[in-house]
Amino acid sequence: MTEIPAAVHDPQRLQILKKYDILDTPPEPGFDDVVTLARQICNTPIALVSLVDRDRQWFKAVSGLDICETPINQSVCAHALAQHETLNIPDLTQDARTRDNSLVTGEPFIRFYAGAPLIASSGLVIGTICVIDTAPRPGGLDAGQIVAIEALARQVMTLLEQRRLIALHDEHAFELRQQIAERKTAQAALELSDDRYRSLFNSLDAGFCVIELAFDKDGTPNDYRFVEVNEAFVEQTGLRDATGKWMRDLAPDHEPYWFEIYGKVALTGEPVRFEHEAKALDRRWYDVRAFRIGPRAARQVAVLFNDITSRRNAEQQQIMLNEELGHRMKNSMALVQAIASQTLRGAGDRVAVQAFNQRIAALSRAHDVLLQQSWTSANLADVVLGAISAHTDPARVIRTGPDVSLEPKAALSLSLLLHELATNAVKYGSLSVPDGTIQVDWRREDGALVLGWVEQGGPPAAPPERTGLGSRLIDIGMVGTGAVRKTFAHSGFSAEFRAPLHLIEHQVGQSHG
Image 1 (tube, rainbow, N blue to C red):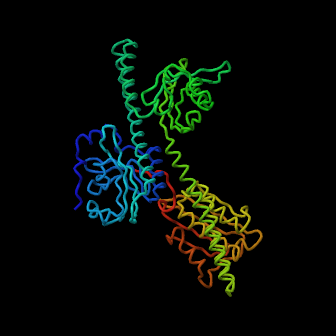
Image 2 (tube, rainbow, N blue to C red):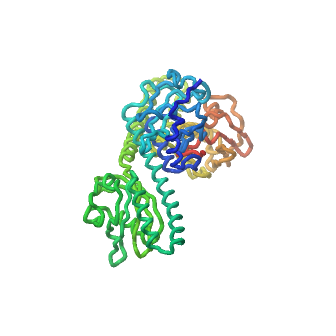
């Protein structure tokens, strides 16, 4: 029986978790981005932002699973609550704390776990950002991956603090309006607001400031003055004693983009959220929210921002690693093709040798499409185009369907499937005659992706007399589901393939909770 750690029921810890008002809230891109990045950095199929409540663990963000919570007796994250460093368990079946966990002994048979604690300002841990695999990992995460996942844990806490700030700001605004109505004096309400506001924004780890925009005679924003800044401002920007000073004086080379975006907010009143590099501030990257405060004539903008340079650097490093991996895989495929050609030079069945080389080339084309998205996904339309272009003029193929982002495994499977279909069409079907065409369409239907292949204008279709590897690859269907319906008609060959969306479609953040 799995023992529940005492830290789970710590009243102070549970009160801090409740303060964030995060449980059972809808998905948010900021948290979804974090688990996607964690999954890529640690090379695991599953990543979660897990918040440990009294009787359950609830997932604010999930990548790789289709659940939003588990009972507390299934929680591995609960064992991370009593420490401030990453819990790294290479094989869950060998650890006394987890070997009897029903998620280890039964579906989905998880084996490896690493969780970086989400540490509140009080020092208590409210959950983890964790990565999970169904295979053991000797040694667990390496040192670089641990540094990265702990940085992502701090980013999650910053996001939670930002949510709390916004909620408190809205709550405070409501209270302030009531006080104004009761006291009949705007000045008294303003003094009350200032005290609460100053206490609130000085407690943030994120940078916060109020700026006043300056415009030239043509109405172009060209500078801004800092009306006030919070205590975290210096650490986030490196700018000291900024209150009352102009940005051009503090950082003469600050890019025009920053003045333009804040000027637009001041004039239109439309809030913005963006990420951008500030080259004049030691090339730091920032995640920024900006919104106008006061009347338009005041031209004042409140800016809440966080230094995300470490995260951006990690993303760039991952992109470079993915590109290098992609190039190496292409080189490996070329080497396999060369070795096969050399080895099979004397083979009597040259058709089989040619088919083998063409299948290697089809995989290589799919790799090219995946490389464009750093091996995280591939656009279905691009995979179709790449597979068809190797056999005929793309103008002979009508492609229709919604935008679908494929998982890497699905992209490779679909590329091979389309290659076999197109090869048969060239040999026996509509592409064997000058005026023949193919229609490829796809759609989402009842939780599945349905892909259709219809040949027109070619000779009548007939079932193959013998079943070779190509026919077997077609019958396997998309990602090996075997859900295939083929029709051999006088008008030509057609087929429909079906596969569950969760096996096919790449999702940055899955729907949950």
